[in-house]
Length: 440
Image (tube, rainbow, N blue to C red; front, side, top):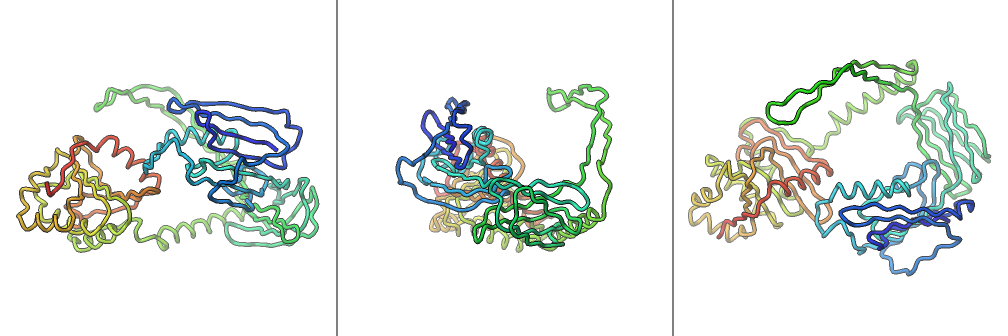
């Protein structure tokens, strides 16, 4: 079997063992290393007859079968049996319990591991020991008319269950008993994808979902010449490349392609116009302040520390709206941070407008836990983030909170990647050290 070990400054953080590998690689020994933030990430691969864990002090044990399309499966063509020993408390050298992922460093690290182990590494893989045992069964697909596929490999045995499909519609299903190495499986119809499962008795040996590439469109870009243009708002020069595009298609359109296109359009329509989640995007018309308040009341029920970025939060003409919004805010028990720009409002001006009863009210409800952060930067877009240890949820506002519901505007839920990326940039570039509290 082949053992692959990855080290962080000589401390091992990931072990991958490939069982059922040919012994003709027993004399192979690979190693390599890269630097990430002045730390050495190294890799070593070697062959052993048997691999044993040093101890059994692991937190989780996972065991099962991985099909060809599973993201944890490192093999391109084979399904695999897999075991994973998980150490939940293993040190993660790239984090200090921060919800902000150092995306650049993780990208370099994951690419390095992907290159040598073909494994999709995540931050939850630190400390894991994984065993993969590939099952030597593969399928090769041939684009004849109708198309077919061939099953091959030293582990081929048992019965095959096949579904020939166009998009998600099953056109034909087959059960082929006592399959053998090199067997070809034909269908009676044309298809663009199929599902295959192979069982030896009750044991699943192989599972794959394959999409046929029936047509390839080539777009050729031909540049004639390049010239530079100086931008008005920057010293950087912009390069213009006049181009001519030519498009080539390698195959004629068949009836199955027209059917697939129709089904795809139907699915897209359903996804975009019928099955839309209500919290993805909400649009408010003019003078829908009540609806805006209901929306904020619902959003603020999310869990996690609240970070609000709104440069115009303390606009001098919106005192009553701000106090209204703060009423919703104090109902959330998590820590709260409001970041505004010093160029578009003043915390002191807002505080001076509060009468003694309003100050007392906010103080009694724990409003002292709200941090008002004055940014030294001019920024424009408005966001609300809910930050917990394991995730960040976020929304982008089409206008400032103090005018939300007064004019036409929208609120959009951000994808997980956008949340991490935008929040990281805002924290690095916008947040200052000048923090105020309303009860000071």
